[in-house]
Length: 170
Image (cartoon, rainbow, N blue to C red; front, side):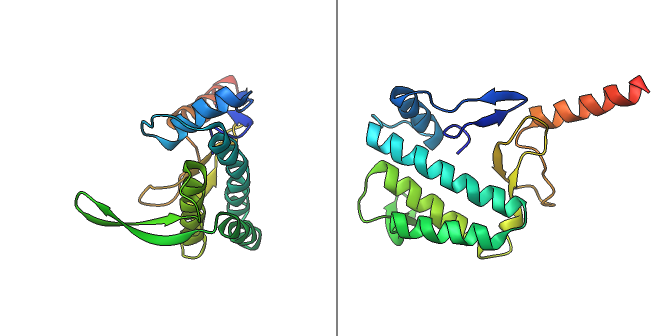
């Protein structure tokens, strides 16, 4: 979501993908593993759905789980996410697929189902939006205590350094 949606990142404006070629490249980077290629229609679909998934994180951060659930339900309908067991090297894995196996819809269906599992359990509080000024990147809090506030160590350091400078100035 962070690579495909505009906003602020680490104190700087982040425009998101500027054109179709950049959207393809960012989609490839966002899915996190090498693929032979990402089709432009998959990149468009992922970019559109990333904006909608961002709504879920923002609603969860604001403790508006009704809004988050409404958006997740719409995503589940739009992607027609359904569970499927897929064979892996070491047994079976549960994945969520849509009615077609395109890259864009497959990833969107899996993400929608994952968000549904988080909001439908006690994990909704683990969906966050960075608390640093001039940053609105989203994250999933995987810390033991569930108190993460920043999208990255860089944003956390930036906030701590600013607080330190402010104390020193007084």
